[in-house]
Amino acid sequence: MKSIFILFLSLIGIQQIQAQLPPSFNAKLESVSIYSHGALLNHSAKVRLPSGTTEILLTAVANQLYDESLQINVPEGVTILSTSYVMDYLKNEKKSPAYLKVEDSLSVTAKVLSDIQNNIVVEENMLLMLDKNQTVGGTANGVNVAELIKVTEYYKRKQLELRASIYNLRQKEELLKMKISKMQQQLKELNSSPSDNTGQLLLQLVSVKPIEGDFKISYMAPGASWTPFYDLRAENAAAPLKIMYKANVVQSTGLDWKKVKLSLSTGNPNRSGSAPILSPWFLRYQQPQQLPNALEGKVAGISANRARAKAVPSDNDMVLNEVVISPSLNEHVNATQQTLSTVFDIDIPYDILSNGKPQLIALRELTHPVQYKYYSIPKADADVFLVGEISGYDQLDLLPGEASVIFENSYVGKTTIQPNTGSDTLQLSMGRDKKIIVKREKIAEQTGTKFIGANKKQTFNYEISIRNGKNETVSLYLRDQYPITTDKDVEVELLDSGSASVNPQTGILTWNLKLKPGATQKIKFSYAVKSPKDKVLANL
Image (cartoon, rainbow, N blue to C red):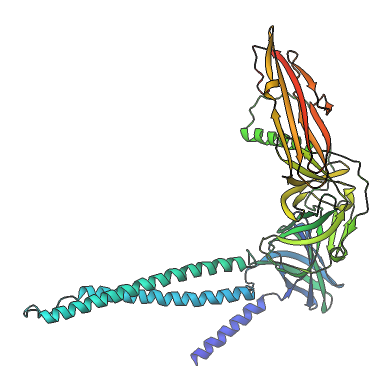
């Protein structure tokens, strides 16, 4: 009777606790708009409300959100008095079938390991007991030789059996430990969410009458982002370029997005929209200070990158044809150019797990005319590079990003797409071509130094040989240089340009070459530098 009474009191306590909790309603995730930093999540919830003031919980909300972005639309006749965000630490852990399968196998393997470890303990105790009980006969009686031999053989045989058994059990123990370790790693891999906790919205409401209706909830969450990625494919130098526009989507909102409609925006809602204001500009003397080495390195790196970008040739003589869009993929993705951004709306629902791992989504497949040129700067790099030039690329809605290059059915490597250069021609590096060989050599017998009074005159002669090992004619954009000076005591004279186009301000020599299949061409150029003989030019 006492047990029944205690059980009855326990049930009353549980009912009282449950009665104190506000009713909860699942906020189903309907669609997500993903930005470069953050995502706009849109939920809907079917809610039943009594008349008067009440509190409810909207569950299955992201584990983080920006409070100022929260918007809740409620049915007519309902007024929201207050909202607060709380974590749901009591959420039931959702495990995938694959996770449950590995978890079951892990449990069985752990039980087998435990049995083996128990057997090891028993065998080791038996061996210890055997070692402690090796006295034959009593102290008053002598030992019979036959009995001694018999007992000795028994101890020997039993010890060997126990030690062999322990060894085998140890081997099985190690194998099971390795298996368990792999299972644990697999469980970690299958764990859908690094944070099992989701959020909840606690609402205090007042309703003029009992209502059953839909609530619409939207908010910005920081735990999601997307970056563009491309595949560039061309069958040969005469074929158009195929551009596969992709997106790497990452999210760790605590919610697994299941069959959710996605849209990807190039905008950034977290960036301030306020226009800048000019304040008075007061001049002041600069205080002497030393730059850290790390900063100096970064500045130098930026300058080097810009220099490399300028080395890529530019040619705007291409006739623009119509862009061809593959209907098989693009009929499911609609790109809309808005005032401040481009939005890709995807009709196909997607599953994106909250695991912080990138998931690749195909957006568009384009075919665009391209003009290919080879370029080489043998002074800087002995290889020849293939560059694709695209005019009218603004209609492609490209974003800065990484691209994989597949040329002539072979993976070439990775390159970057930088569409915001201000030029009307987009240049894409398609990788190195080993079939075109360029060799730059100094002609030793025509290079030397002469002394003239207080000065010395150094003469430099170079020969560049180019061989086209391809089966088609190629256009090669070749560059080299001669030094320039701003020192009045140093004179530079270009003796032979080798029929190059010369830029005297930069010292750049440019050749636009056409090489037939198997053809070899040689180019010579030379220059002289006159300087004081008692001084050394460090970078000549």
